[in-house]
Length: 211
Image (cartoon, rainbow, N blue to C red; front, top):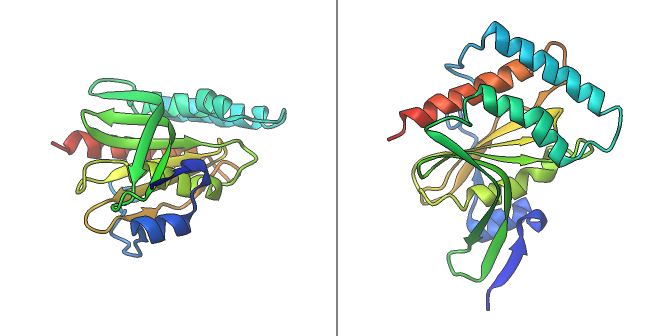
């Protein structure tokens, strides 16, 4: 009899032991977040400056909940990265299910935001309350990404608390592997949203090149 686990309750240990997921230590495995980044415009920077200012205003009045993070932080980023425009489309609260190869374990849950190009999952986005850390959503988003049906094409993800961002790349293949970017923090000097947006635009170009 199969056992169903909610994605919010899954652990990295579960994903490693039940689904064979492995962390890649190859620096070239996930080069997309560092190389050939798209230059953002002066207008992009102005919008990102406003988004950063809005975030620090919002955290003065806790709790900063997931819906607010999606509206105030994710919305402008996805808009400027052109993920709301053709040939992309988005789905919110998208239900997914992934099962162990023997069928004895099923993980199910809902993706906060899923960006697609035809059948290609460009981006799986998990947002958390500002009080949470990036680690709180890592196993959950990896479980969602394992539901991606294409074995050979990469699936990209992003976790954000509004003030922290990390990108993930997963390739299922015979042995599913993943890697992470650095964590971008809004409390660092400058505005790291510039780089977050550049990475999103880079992933948009990766998606457009896929056939």
